[in-house]
Length: 396
Image (cartoon, rainbow, N blue to C red; front, side, top):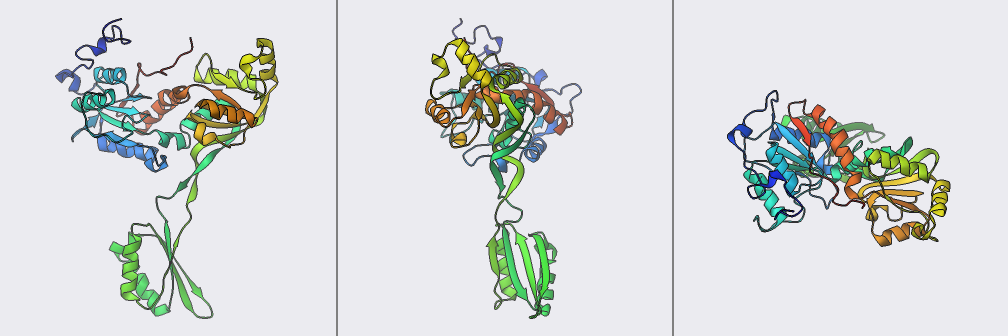
């Protein structure tokens, strides 16, 4: 072992860990046109809107090199560690998509005194942009959680907590009743170019016997004050009712997935196919609150697992403890849960499969997402995956 500890003879870490880019490395890649960073980010945010992220998360473009910045090679990683960043520099990557955000808690300074800060400083020095999707891809239809749920085989799925689309197109409804004369004035005002763009929807109908016209407008929260100001300037004596519209679930998106198998399946069969799907040699199982599997003889344990039938599975990629609390299912499938959360689940008759945190995420990133981004960016950007990203834990 060298003085650099676990890195051993890792050649990327010569010269204070990080290699410096040469002029040759900064030149164009043969056959790759590249894409401006702003366009890459625009496409990424269209693919996975940042509004899907949990409120506590920190997603999107986290490190932006000074303009102009063309992206010819993008590296995907689950975690942005020092070895991964060194690899990105050697591979001449212009951008890193790090599923877990390297900036999570607020930073008061950027120095080389801590590993996290050093990584950011080095990325900036080497003009490498950093983008993090994290819980955006968890919630996304066809994202990390749906990919993990596919390990179960044929089943129906729905989000445990549906995403409510509040950012929005139609956050408020403005409703008023006007005479035919006033309605024509109001309609003309609304159809003027500088006002029309503020409105999402407009609806009018005649109300009998008063012969008033009901006028409804839906608009966003940010544009509502301008519309109200215009209304009261012209109709000071006419009331308008403002209603905040209920947020609507965005179909297929949300936190976690509750899956129902087409027919009950033996727990042993599920374990075998999940291990194959995730390409892992082992996982951890809790399946009985009365006699923990750890104290059973091997034959008893195998009999219990083979006979236990599963039809409903709650799935959460990464850490599922808080989201899975109280969810009714035969089985929880996630990366990690606390000791006490596992005890609470088994006490309620729910078995628990733990695969370790990043094992439930990496397969999506390195396989499905890599293909999706190649198509999304029209092959103008080379998409690579890190060879130095892996789960920090292993079974020995």
